[in-house]
Amino acid sequence: MSEAEARLYRVALPMRVGFDHPAARRSASDSLVLSLTVDGVTGLGECAPRAYVTGETTASVTEELRGVPLDGLFARLREVPPEELLDRLRRDGFAAAGVDLPPEAPERPGAYNNLVCLLETAVLDLLAHRLSVPAADLLEGFPAPATLPVSQVLDLSLDVDEFLDTRGPFHFVKVKASEDIDRDVRTVGAIRDRLGPKVPVMVDANMSWTPETAVPYARRLRDAGAELVEEPLPRRSWDALRTLRRESGIRVMLDESVCTLADARAAVAAEACDAVNVRVAKNGGLLNAARLVAYARSAGLAFQIGVQVAETGPLINAGRALAFRSPDALTVEAGQSDRFFPGPEMIVSPRPLVDRRANTLAPPPGPGFGLRLTPSAAPWAALTWADGRWSPLTRKENPR
Image 1 (cartoon, rainbow, N blue to C red):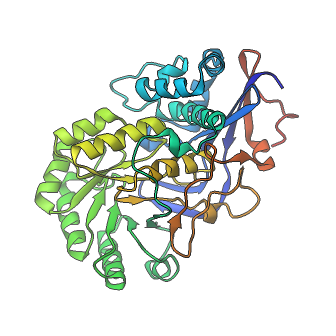
Image 2 (image 1 turned 45 degrees about the horizontal axis):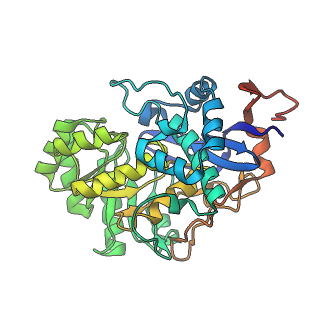
């Protein structure tokens, strides 16, 4: 093994159960996992690009990564003590890692967020292994509680009665909107009838409403018992979102509209939201996500620690590290990797778990994200970096 090497895995695990919402239907994972090894210490990172969120795809991020020389990164990891490099990353962002990334285009906010996330999470995991600390200790925030309650998501593949019968106990419920507002109103009403007034209910429209339908739809859902709507309009519809908040009496959480800190500031200036959904991949890595959480607190916004559907490993525990430093979050999404990938196909060990008896999380074990790749990852290997260059794996090296 060379002193410094990297390997990229393009992971498309078939899901045992699908997941449907207005913006996408998913039956397989779609992630990139990066393994960085420097002088015998390995860090694992992951991103889950979604074209309808930041415009990125696994193909586009792979191509961007092939243009990123890693020599500068490996030099920083060798030459700078881990405590000092971590301080630089916190202060200056991922530019402190010595990697030349494509310049941001103003018309494409967040266009390289998943590329940064992939590299940064691998670097942070490696630094945490060197420091022998869990990933949450790399972040500033509140002391971590012993457990965290997590939300339950009703997507379009599941009937509301089955959801209520099988997915409790419930701490927070997110309903993925359909194309039928009458159905959505009935769904919210059924949930409220069963669960009573104390469990928050949010409807995620995934940008499927129009400025003309938004106010009447929101009023009907509010009257049925919903307290929030998530990303109801096409992204960054600031004026229409302000109108929706003022005229419907329902709170608005933004997701796809807030990919960068600048987006969050624009939304606040426009009075366009009450809350933001913070997702590590969407928001450009763990440190940028933590910055967004800090801004939300300072601006008086509520926030959710969210996930991309079908994360496969490091990204799961990166989000959980952030969640355990953010116990003031409105809610935490744990994902459903245990349901999507219950068999030996899971590419990391130990499996990131949810206590389904209580629908709670325990902190990731550490050091770092507390994960290692399993043999199931090998068929998904796509690129290697060694001796100063990226190379595609041969058929012999990648039996898939």
